Image (tube, rainbow, N blue to C red; front, side):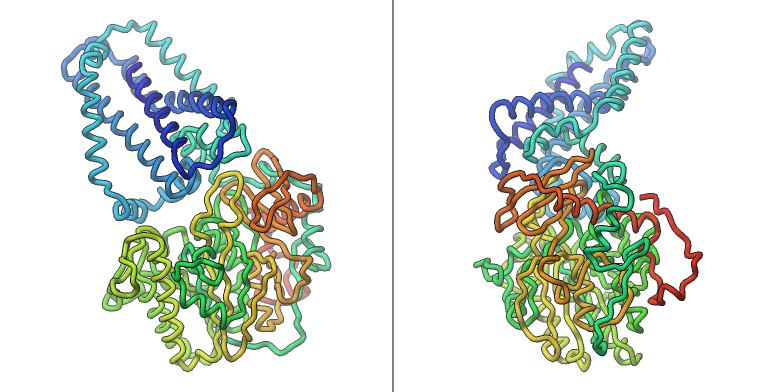
Amino acid sequence: MLLAAALWLAISTAMRVALALRPDLAAVGGPADWLRVFGYGLAFDLVAGLYVLAPAALWLALLPQRLARTAWHRALVWIAFCALVWGFLILAVSEWLFWDEFGGRFNFIAVDYLLYTHEVVANVWQSYPIGKLLAALGALALVVGVLARRPLWQGAGAPLGWRPALVVVLAWGLAIAASLRWIDTDAKNFSRQDAANDLAGNGLYEFFAANYRNELSYDRHYATLAPGEDLKLVRAALGVPGGEGVERHVAPGRPERRLNVVLVSVESLGAEFLGAYGDPRGLTPELDRLARESLWFSAVYATGNRTVRGLEALSLALPPSPGQSIVRRPGNDMLFSLGSVFEDKGYSVLFAYGGYGYFDNMNAFFDANDYRVVDRRAIPPERIKFENVWGVADEHLFEQVIDEIDREHAGKARPFFAHVMTTSNHRPYTYPAGRIDIASGSGREGAVKYTDHAIGRFLEQARARPWFDDTLFVITADHGANARGTMRIPVDKYLIPLFLYSPKHVAPARIDRLMSQIDIAPTVLGLLDFDYYSKFFGRDVLASPPQSDRAFVANYQALGYLRGDRLALLYPKRKTEVFRVDARWNPVEAVDDPDTLREAIAFYSAASHVFRRGLYRDEEQTPPEQRSALTPVRNSGY
């Protein structure tokens, strides 16, 4: 047992050293900070070791001595030891690969993705030489087992009376109980540097802590205002005259333009890849052309770093909430959404995804919110010439979407709204050969260039359709490609493109105002001059004064609010920070700005309130005075 514990601590410490030597690691601090990193790290390694080795300790302490001395038991202990060492090594390599992908220890993303083992395991298998890695680690574990065979053989059969055994079991149990009572993952967060706090943690402990925290009650964990003050501030910001929620009547006073709308949310398309934003690599010729020919909003920030966050923002126009996206939560049906507005206006409403829509609960969410869902299962086999674990190549998805739209246009005298979610710009970055001049599977640059090619091909095919002239194409992203970080949010990595393209109806222009992803839905509806009852927290940028510009950025715990030259950050345990930032939203100095902080708290708190209290339900676009006073109020459990 002592040997296994020593190996656990040695491997955990070696992993911490290896991560500390990564060339991409951000600054940690001075010698005192490094002492804290390894001091806290050792403490969390010990706590994690209590859990990892608890079954073995219980087995060895309670096994009758006559069985402990048998050859088969000693052999079993040796095999279990080798398996345990192999598991330690696999965990260490997994941590390294996770850090490589997400820039931190295991967190909510790791917990979330393990619910979808087929996609994740296949993705990892296609992206790394997993077979060779497992074999090499297994061989190393066997070498360690061979070197430790003598002490293991002797220790497995060493006598242990019932009294010492009872003391071991009780002491182990008390230590675990104490760790549950007095230690949590926040105890290691001694620094303002994410790298330091991540290094001070233990990957296995962080994984289970993230699993425990995957849904966070805003009111319990985050800063709040006096009761009712949050909604009062938000209603004032949105121009809502009164009431319990944020509903208001949007009345442009002009005839509605009932254009078709195709919204394409491109997987992981950070603005840093586009030539229009200054990238010199020439990866996005089609999107760069769109920037010249579209109404281009150049300062749009995604709300999160996951696809479900982007889908939440684009469909619901709500600020992100801590923990799970609403797309993944219970009680997310019959909500007020972009699709519900179009559906109530007589549109045919579609959500199309190139993969299997059970992933991230996409099918269930959109199906329950007035969308007709088309996913991988609806695409005919003869159409699919290329696919990977995440779904069909983008060009095949777009072909299916064109067919769906053709059928809608031919069979019904009503306009359509289609939300299309792509998949090709995702690890393992594979796509059909011969489309671009970068080999499939060679990295992110090729995937970006391929998805750009697929978008250009889609628009070219659409241009030949009778519905093209009366269609508004909205091209944006679900999130950026490298939006890493756990506490401090790398805001510049949340910048995404937004192009509104309709040659017959929308004049090209560039809008440089700060804009949130949650503003896209109301801005599109405003461009169509829709008269409707809105519950969106987003606003029509084209009809709003510049002084109202703000954006929301978040990860699974930290909530950010951008306004002017200020970045407000909200954390669990009601911790808050406000910074003055430079032009790229990098914090320059901490400042005391109670007004910006109150606005941030108000928006996030109010968003939590309206969802939790059932105030974000779809009301079928009927005037408030005509609705039943007995509309049920639902508690979502959030």
